[in-house]
Image: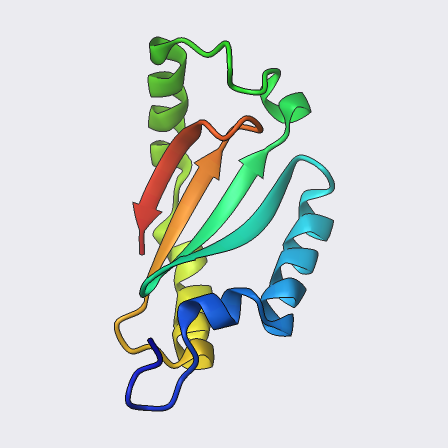
Length: 119
């Protein structure tokens, strides 16, 4: 799926050393509170932040719909696209996919999605 500019595909980038460097930096910064991974889906690059069970007090399996909605609302209020935009722009340049979509996703440790936003 590399575009005409000769960039790499999103999935190639996810498996690259550069992606590993990003996740290492994030995971060092987060110090166990959450982990970062990248996932590719066509021209969408998802930055997935998985909150630890310790951080949330649950792995997500026992969250009620109301608790999930409360978490989503809180994350929506705290979410600040401008914090991620410089990195999004850097990733677009690095990967070379002109119509790259960068998606920010927060999940519980059992994989329950709490928040997702495209940049």
